[in-house]
Image (cartoon, rainbow, N blue to C red; front, top):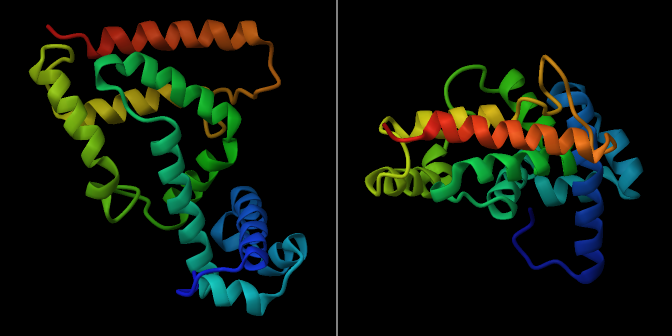
Length: 195
């Protein structure tokens, strides 16, 4: 993004670009996304987009890292109740399926192995520290905090838009979501229980 502060008009244009590009990248991935469609939807031009983000890759990075920050902020970890955290993640995937699709495209097109992001410490440090504290307090089973976090997140994604079994949607009956939340909560509790 540009270094100088945005005017209110500039901020509105920036937000339209982000919204349009989020949808575009979630639908088509990095390679399949088209800047022409983004600027048309955002009612702006390529020069403005490139002034803010530098390149198509810079635009994807801004959106992708913003989505990771959003999930961290909207669904903060509570290592004293990882089962509830898993359920809150499930609910966020229902609200924002596009964010999970962005992460999947990043995995497929950029980092097929290892950590999803290069600066993993910045994103996981708080979570891993919280899990380690819960372990020290005897609330969570022993083991590598990263592995425990990965298992809980994977369980929360069982019905996400990238599931290879079944992708849930917010439009489904609430009873179906409640049933899944109960199963998820009970399953995570069993997996992370100490002893």
